[in-house]
Image 1: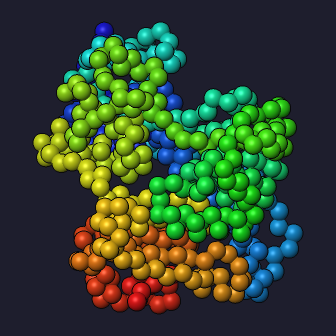
Image 2: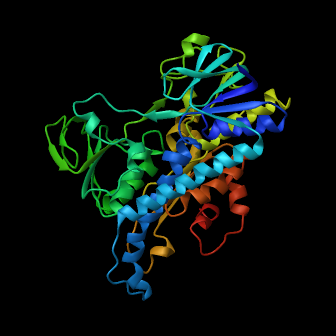
Image 3: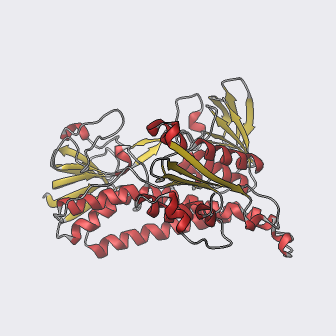
Length: 453
């Protein structure tokens, strides 16, 4: 017998969870189908466990500076197996918590892999693309299955890790080669180096973090190199040879790099395999599901949020898309997500955070004569006694005619925490004069945003 629902959500990630719980609050009967753990990429194999590893990796630098504060630390040892085990335990706790939240909200969690049988029926199987065990009738369907790491087609690629695998290791080897230049590559390079691993990072192009403000990415590069990360620009991956824990990376220029592990941080793609989209007639554009401003696909009753749309692949964006969908469809209070002003952060070492237009974007949009940049570059007080660590960069990008702050950017300690608050001002259309009128909190790093000449 088929079960009928007002909404069936495919995927228990951030966007799907947000949509399901809010829809139930409006009186809808909702089921969410998930074949993996509950919580999605961010909670299970992304932002949360990664940030915990970042915290662990920063301790070595803090211990290094302890003597400057009169603290003697002798005989300290690092056991990455303990850190990794504790991170997995925390992920397990969060998974259980999200399951509990769904139950309290009144969302029916159906464990299994869901796929379209036709536009309104979802089949659920225990194994992905396996035999159908259950059929759900849905008035509306939301696709929120997220993305998966992309593994390039090079010989030996199967010998390497992707980002999902990093949290499953018992311990890290002495030497790792990281392939990629994006935020995942830079974040894991910093994590590994902070945990005492030798890191070589292969960058196909000539800069890190393409798409971010170029000056900021240059400061991150400087800090990473100061930490001992061997950045090799203009180096593409040709092959990986050997066997587990005894690998050799071969570059396109012919270099051979021995290592104990290889991380392929070469991007992510929507996870559309096995969804049966063709059975429902859901349109796919390239490797993504296109949607309009209301998250609607080419079918009026099928919606998609988060990474499957490949617009802005960030957890808070997926959450807001899911909630906006529920508000509009079930709450009868239509609203759309503003994708034009989204703050983002890279938990590299040093940390980068940004909101609004980069210097390059502002010039391309308005012209060089209509853009002025204010910046402050300094070593923070936290590093005054240890006398080591990267310098901070704080940067405001302004429109000349109005003085409006078009972009607010930072590299340095607590950058993400600071930019989160700055994003409110930028979103409200604050000007440089508004920043200047704000009394500084002294001594802080963030005061430089309101004291720039």
